[in-house]
Length: 454
Length: 176
Image 1 (spheres, chains in turn blue, orange):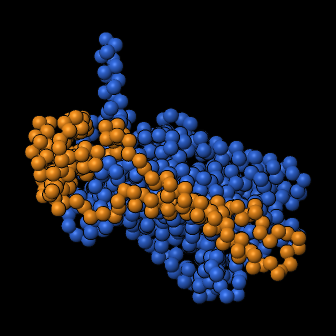
Image 2: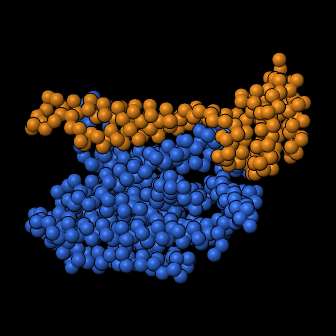
Image 3: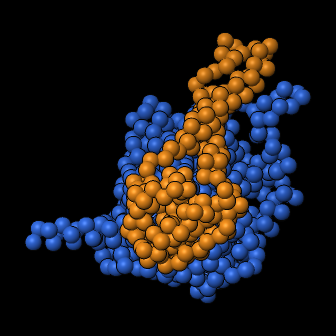
């Protein structure tokens, strides 16, 4: 298996990444077209919902949260991969993250933007979205600061703005490379503006290093807090099946899991579309696969903890909800979640599949399907079997409009992500150079040591 | 006395390091090796600090101030708003409840920390900046550049050192 070559010319690294900004494979345009179609369909659904009313989502008492909230959690979870690859692995000095962390960071940003849309779509009255913001007003009315929903709004805003800044700061040296290489035109002007006059001086690098490290340190607890707070939206309520202590770590594990699965999917797509075979190598893919496998097992364990907590609790209604999940109307989806989330990743345990691209692509999609089902299975069954008998057997099936908006969210995310990868370098050039430099230094040291020994 | 700038490009890091060492030992009049020299590189070389000497970084002070300000602002904004409910019946519950307020304070602590760290980075790194006239796009590829500012009298000695170490290119410009 070929990894990134230590003797690769730095000029070639620049050229290869620059090519991705100009000549992607035709598949890029096909993906972009379908993403645009999906997004357009969603816009149509939203216009219809806006004009007709929230009834078209097919939610009604007791089903007050539907597919939109489930998908919102899914997208928030997806965003955690960027933090994992950029921040956690950065602090652990895992240099294999260098060619792939940029697109993972972009994924974080666009996932959060997609998740934010679902909150607005869910509340229906878009023009009153600003009610959730804490601003001084003449009536002295403030949002409820003790509500996890407000914590969520604040945490997501903090996470989104910090992620955008982290992505931008990490990209400055690369923007300077693109600025220096690009032919005159609007793009050169854009890169010149965004590069902020970066010249790679020792003073700039020194401050850059500290800044990047500091923000990475902030991002890790922030990412954990974001998904813990999302878990609190459920865990701090009294609804059966949600009031579980292990919800925050369970949500965080699920978030990292879906994020890693999405990284595998996008890794394979980008590798082909932008001809990054030399940088997004199979050994790197293998490492991500192993990481995903480990997280999948953690998620499976926490799932079991959640079921056990409910099963051995003295809350009969929560227990009934769990039984309903396994045997009721939602059973195929619930078992589908278990299968996709806990059984399918066992494929990763086999060495021959750890670098088999078609298998990994299919498996990564199944994992994400499982993780999406997980979120839906958190939201829907609880509302279908609450504490009051009148709520029992109120199964809800989402409408076509709701499905359309969920489908569109994938289009919207893909659209943003693919445009980003075409406009900005999705492989970090300077960090790949650093990786190559350090590896060649290491090789030289080993050779010298060997010669000395002889 | 007028100062001039010189920029020399080197193909690899070892050569650049040798030049800096010689500039340090040469003690050329009209050129201060600590203040008048900038090394530009395509990647962050940890060795640069070793031969340029430790230079302070102040970004973390911005971080500290930003995070504290963010946290304090968050806490007092929330508590101030909750104090508006003072005249309302709270049923024995605290007017300013610390545990839930801690969460938003924590988020604001991070938000303030990140924002002000970025500000600190821009201030400390001197960004945004106009690109200096002596700049080579080769630094974006793989060259190491040594930019010096020196008095007219020191220029020839500096040039000689650059040439001696086989600079790939030497650019010069009259200073202001």
